[in-house]
Image (cartoon, rainbow, N blue to C red; front, side):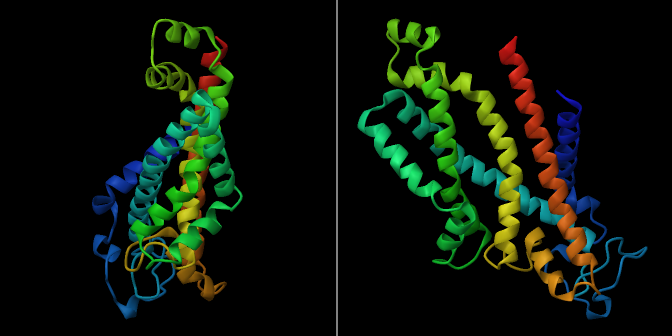
Length: 270
């Protein structure tokens, strides 16, 4: 793996560890919930609160550590929902072809014609905002990208010798798709999943910024940015540190995704 990929792995691994150990690492774990102390409201960074406090006196560092839990949960659930749907439909369209290919690809085109954030906002507008509905809405907007990716990969390798050998040996469509084609598409899929994790975190923060994601008092990066934005530039620390939290997470996943892409590219060239 390249140096940048290794750096991405360190960043992502560190953030995941921080999210898991948040109850023990956070200086004020109770501030991740419905804690209020107006006397501490909007204190700038100091020895007691390294990143300062928010509008109700909660420690921003503690909430930032817990907010990563929300972000990683969103990314994991979205990918666990979107990837299987996209991979299955992409394999079916690319390998089986015919009318099924036409239906799947035209449906995919319809979804891809609408920006993912706009589609997710439209879905969330029909329901009460919550983290659960944000997960479902983003997943609903995300699966077509995997359909297109896996379809293109399937079309490019469906005539390879090992696929034809499996068909000659009597392997059925399911065995050929999931036993022969899918393992050879793991590189592009894993690369996209890693890159998408960062984009999902960014989209989740965007939805929360608009009030369509996690509800208070749940710690969330987008909500924390939104709460501090009206107070800029005087009270800068809630927005700046929360935004940096998003940037670090997205940067880590992007670097890791590039490293995985290079790793699989090197394997395939050997």
